[in-house]
Image 1: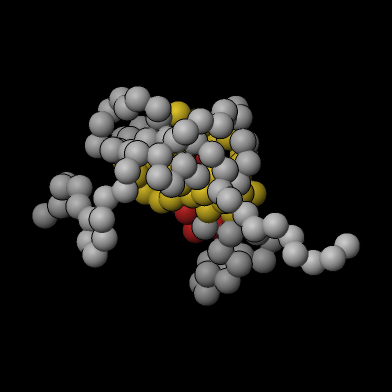
Image 2: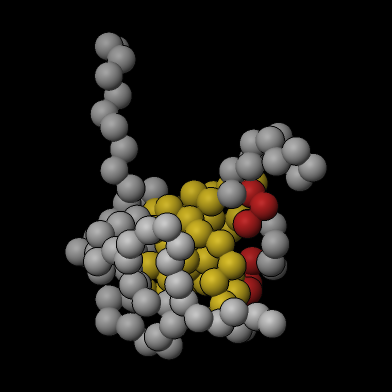
Amino acid sequence: MKNVEARIIGGEETTAGEWPWQVALVHAPSSSLYCGASLINLRFLLTAAHCASILPMHQIEAWLGGHDLSKGVEEGRVVRKISRVIIHNHHNRRTLANDLALLRMDQPVNNTRTVRPVCLPEDSKPR
């Protein structure tokens, strides 16, 4: 029997906007979460290649800025379609080596309190 209750195992619920780069990858026809991604700039998401190859591109939606995926509509949530999937050239489905993919959203997002690219460290190498 499928467990349809939302639950957190071994953790605590975050507050809205605490992880503004976290993205839900959703099967568009059913609105079901199937994978996650990280916002790396205002147009691209980083995810696992095995997540990017599960569904046809036109069935993938990126839900950004949300907090409660059980709500059909949520204040602050931004939904984008995917216009391009770029899977690592050396991805191996059997071993999951190089399990990386980029997803290009059909429109850029705006920085908000709940939507913001992941924080990356500064390059510490001298140039």
